[in-house]
Image (cartoon, rainbow over all chains, first blue to last red; front, side, top):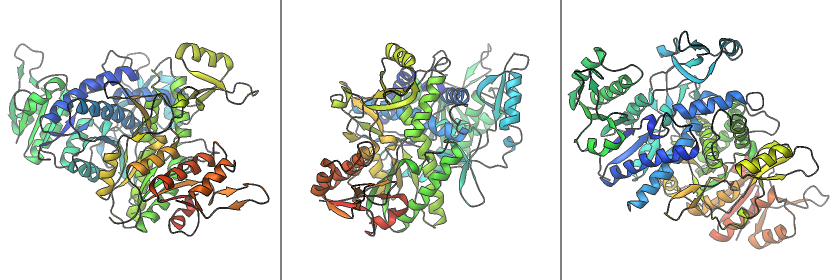
Length: 317
Length: 317
């Protein structure tokens, strides 16, 4: 098992397209496309550990939990995260196993339910900003604030009924199940882990971990996963083949290979959107800086080409 | 890692008590009690692979999926099974890790999302009998039959609005993720697997597995897991310390150690209830018969004593 160990953080499109409703059938079709690309990467000799987002799935589940609240106890946000790891993990391991079988590759694939440690002292707990779950009327939002202690915010100021619950998005400190993930990888397995940024947990005084109402950014968690399992590369997949500076302007320019210092410069100059390319570039910078190894940002269909240095944006120390 | 490898199939009480609502907090407390017992077993040198049911959790999720159907696409039964594996698996690995830490034992614990293969030719597909999800009025049941193709049945004949969807409960053929589970066990890990009887999948013509609308009995799946990972023992935990013949009658008698032939005799004589002790005894018989090794039925609080031969019902070849 000498191939490079690559943590691959999938984009949202890998599971659900924006225009879709989100039926099981639609999601399995999307996951299957992703699985084909992963099989190509494995066939080429790489050892991927795959991580993914869960935004639309967690959103749907939170609506279901909310709407049935009078009949069935709504589970905590941590439990909902765990549930979407099962949901998406199953679809991924199912289709990846098949695409490997088709390529005549015998490698066990499985999903590991993954907790990610965060700190209560993270500044984001003081000023939560990540919207989760359904949209509310101002009245309903206030009721939830009163009764459930939710922090609510009008996420599109001026737009009617655009109130939502907001939760912290703290920094990941460590991947709790890193040893199990490493064991599987060392035995030649393909692992799906830390879905949805991981189930956020904090360390209690007695040493136990307890679930917290938070959502960890999946690319940041992907960086932490790559760090904790000592990956050779971190690859973050998104909608575009390369990272651009002056994006959507006449002098737009795709980046091929840049240093950490250059990437930090572009980031500080505001070239990357906060909710979009920003966190991806940040996660890539952290990996390159910490490990001295390469981080790549590209699109799903270019993933193998990018690993082979033919395209994508490469950030190196 | 020379300790005996034991597949432990937990009873429903291990996660949710019958009188409880099923909040996250209640379930974590129950799971914690279970985790303490598992830690004792690990401390005594055994290597458990833990499996569990998901009845109440899947039931709650199906109600939530159903009630929000107009806003959010309901996921398939296979996906719901995967989601409850994430939910329960997380709680278990979380509390088991803590109880091991407390006992000064360094062993990684994780949950593996697990598919279980079934056959479309299983006779149960012709005559589904396992009720799942909410209770319906006869009108709603007929509507779902018409629109969704559900098979519905009045599960308590004569009781108003006791219509439910019924699905097949086919025999498990193989644990798809057995290699990953074995890899983790061999590396010294504690694994939670095949929750809720596993995600039922069938083999398609192209070689892929697809999810099926079915529910596999968790004790039968536990037997198959024990077989597939070559466990030394299968232990099925339930409400009672021992299996009884003439249960609740004046001549009731607890069974200590019986042969497969004796167990089959009692089973055929109708000593064990079909929906309750029957499938447990059947699963235990299969394991003892197939492996020549020991199957044990006992209660959670007697689990370690039973492994050490002090109590419980032992079925041997």
